Every structure is written in C-alpha cells, then in structure tokens.
Image 1 (cartoon, helix red, strand yellow):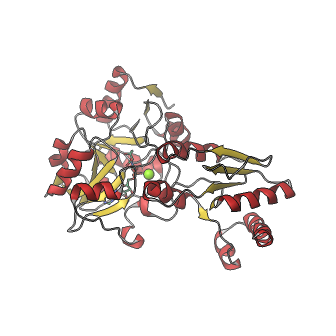
Image 2 (image 1 turned 90 degrees about the horizontal axis):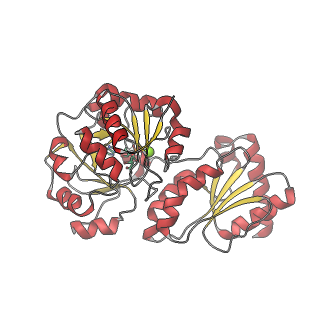
Image 3 (image 1 turned 60 degrees about the vertical axis):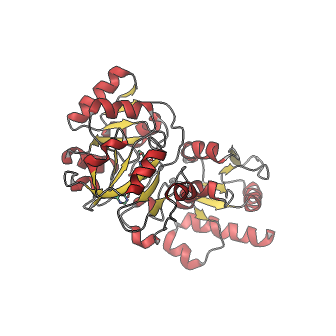
Length: 358
Ligand code: TXA
Ligand code: MG
C-alpha cells in the first residue's frame, strides 16, 4: 500500500533511505509533484518509466541541491548556464546541458544531454541535501495525463506504484518548469513556464530559438497531446461557450464542465462552472487541480475559455492547447479519424447550433 506521509524531518530521512535502496519517492516541488529515484541507479530509474507507463526514450529531469552540483552532472558548462543558475535557482527553470559521462543513459533517454534543475521547495531541497545525490524525477502522473499539484493527485495517479509520497502541500506555481537547452550553439526554449522567454533573454542578452515541433520528439512536453484529461476538452471563446450552454439547455441531456476567467461566462443549470482568477499566476496555480476535478464521468465535455494571448499567459496557453482541441467547425474526415461515434453526434449537433447562432 502507498504511504502518503507528512514531510517532516524523520520522513525526509526515511525518503532518502528509500531512494538509496532504489525505491520511488514522490516529492513536492514548487511546480508539480515529481516521481523521484536515485539518478545514478539505472534500475531505480527504470522503475520510474514502468510506474508512469512512459516510453524509455523520453529523458528525465535530474534535481540537484544547488548550482555547485552542476559539475557532477554536466560537462562543457557554458557561461550562460551559470548566469541562469545564478539568477533563477532555486526555481522553476530546467537547463539542458552536455551530460557528464557518469550520468546513466537510462536518465537521458539515450541522449548525450541532461536536464538539470534546483527546485525551490523546502522539502525537495532538504531531501536532496540529506540524500546527497541527484534525484531523477518526471512529473508524478501517468504518461500523457495531467501533472499532480497535490499529494492526493499522486495517489490517484500512481497508487501503490510509488513507495512513499512526501506530502508537502499544494504546489505554489502549478505548471511545470521552463526548459532551456544550452547544449548547442544557440540557446533554445523547449518548454514555457513561469519564468518567461523575455526574462531569460534579459539575463542572457541573447534571443532564444524556439525549435520546430517535429524537431523535438525527445521532449514529451512538446508533443501535441499531453497533459490531457480523459473527458473531451475544448478551448473556446466566451461567446462560443454561451451558445453551447444554450444548446445543452435545449437538449437537456448532457452536462458541461466550464472553466472561465471572465464574467462574460455565466453559470447555468447544465454546466458545472469553475471560476478562475483573471490573474495569470493564480490561474496557473489552480488549473491542473480544476481540470482534474472536472474530469469525471458525470461531465460529458469540458469547455475552457481561451485566456488572453499575451506573453504572461504563454505557459498556461501552451498547456491548454495540449489538453484541449480548439473549438472549430470540423470536417467529416476529421471526425472519422479522431472521434468516437458519440462525440461525432455531439459535435455535429454543436456545429448546427453554432451555424444558427453565428
Ligand atoms: O517542473 C518540472 O519540470 C517537473 C518537476 C517535477 O521538476 N518535472 C517535469 O518532468 O515536468 P517531466 O518529465 O514531466 O518533463 C520533463 C521534460 C520533458 O519534456 C523532457 O523531454 C525534457 O524535460 N527533457 C529532459 N531531459 C531532456 C534532454 N536531455 N533534452 C531535452 N529535453 C529534455
Ligand atoms: Mg510530465
């Protein structure tokens, strides 16, 4: 049976002991919960992939206690890496560098680079210190599902596949770290996060490249479908949500889950409405938990009001576009390839409603 325990000093000692034995410990970080194993123990690392159902070629992030530990994990560390580490660590930034020969290939998915981060969470930092090594930890969810932002989410996701869950409360940031690749000639932004592209560019005085989608098959964070609820989820405008709500009220059969940040979206009897903050940090903090709450059999479809397109919303928008399909009138061919019969009917009907309304 899984033990979710409070992250007191005795349990942190116990967690370090479990890591040394090659076991899996879920740890709180400021971004999301991670599924941790001793990064120098290939057998332990393999257990992470098995627990998550994650393909072995997808590399993991190694969590280290401080920037001084960088030299244990990476070689040919550029000045840019030291600058970013100095400015943003501990914090929600992951840096990809050329790997040290001692880093097992199991951690890096067979690549010659390694992703490193110093998390800004007292429990994670204290565990790293007591453990005295690097902890490989992807988000503690099953592959392609919503990342956990509370200990109870980890329990739902992984149950007894993890040997201990250190409960450090709700994650403050709520979205995964920004990832910057400094292993090549040109710095590249592999994943958006709370630390923005502009903030990084200001420190480096260099502009970041954004690689083409297809060029990054090794980064699951860049796959089209990721962070996805089971329930079909659509990104829509407030206007579209209103029309669909009306249509559902007319039909009286289906229940909608609605996530909205503006007052333009109103509650109605056929919708379970989740009001989000219009403040991006607050929104990011709440998003995964709210998506998880609505992802239940009683809800037929989740509609998310599209947040603003400005840079501060970049990380949220990136996650939402992966969790959801953008609501649009689609062709029959799309239906055949992607959707179940039931969804085909619902969407066909919604198309008709929208045509009447727009
Ligand atoms: O906030 C976070 O980053 C959380 C917490 C637990 O630290 N971790 C997390 O891990 O989101 P994960 O495995 O879910 O996502 C790690 C991302 C993946 O997209 C992976 O492909 C990328 O980091 N990554 C890891 N090593 C890499 C490498 N050598 N080159 C390129 N991308 C890499
Ligand atoms: Mg993940």
